[in-house]
Amino acid sequence: MRNTTEIGRYGESVACFYLQNNKFKIVDQNFYASHNEIDIIAENKKYIVFVEVKTRSCYSERDLEFGTPAMAVTYSKQRRTLAAAQAYLIQHPTNKSPRFDVIEVYLHKNRESSLTEVLRINHIEDAFGN
Image: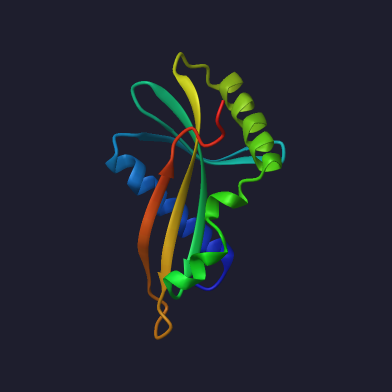
């Protein structure tokens, strides 16, 4: 993987796989409303979950000292995600409770090859708080 777009897309595919393995159904990906985007929309029995995926690649654990990927979900990004979620819910009404999660995907870059492995996944439920 060479650029941030490829890394981001890979992180989103990892997050989808993770969600599916944790009893979520993926109902939409890369949903756009105006200039606002939601990476993944998933649901389980209780919630419709709007997921922001943040992926960080590194060569070692030391590269992670500069903050978590979730720190990149600023207040402004949260507002844009909320606006997109409102647009989605107008188009797709549901009785399920909405929730806003962040999934951090940590990737290990191999200096000798283009291979990338998943170091860990951190699922932050209700990341925007109430």
